[in-house]
Length: 287
Image 1: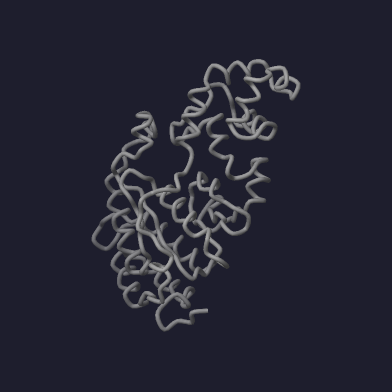
Image 2: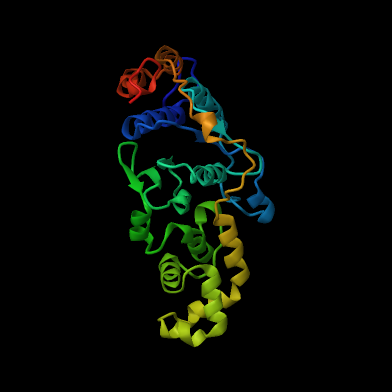
């Protein structure tokens, strides 16, 4: 267990800081922002009280480290966006939507949460994520998402509507697994089209190789399917005050201030790694 000189736990904080440096080193972003969940219930909890109910209460040690992570972001001069009633992913979705009209801009979402794959668009909006550990990363563009699932990123909420998502306690259609969900979407498209085909002709579905059992499950759990899709869909209308001009500034962090904060948390190995991202600091090369 990692601890700061004052004895407070820093495991998660160290991982967060190491990942942040890795992002800066590998991706060399011109502009960078962070989004956070807030402790209040979101619109998803209001719509479905069982949403994420299986998760254990967040440990106090982790809560204190999440609060301190914002201190690190402040030192890096990285703006934080959050809004009560919305999740961090919804804030991301909203920002991605706002940035779509900017020309010659590539948006990279750095996240361990693969729900964000639904935001991927061509090569302009991609997801940078960890595969196994901090040293094993991958980038998902539209082609890579299609290779993994067999359909476009925007259909991921439809997929979750069918097979659910245990990590968020999203039901899906009871009895339909990932493979059947993939097949249904590959053959018929989004949930609305699947049900349109089903209501028009069950025979057509059977001809396409869909088993009678799956058809019966779809009929029985239609309400769950659409509610699950809604829960899985990242919103793009969070009422945040975001403008590209707000983050498009030349205000760069000071390496000395960051050195002090890393020493405060006992991150000696990370202090030396700050040299790897020299370009990001004031007086650094802004190329």
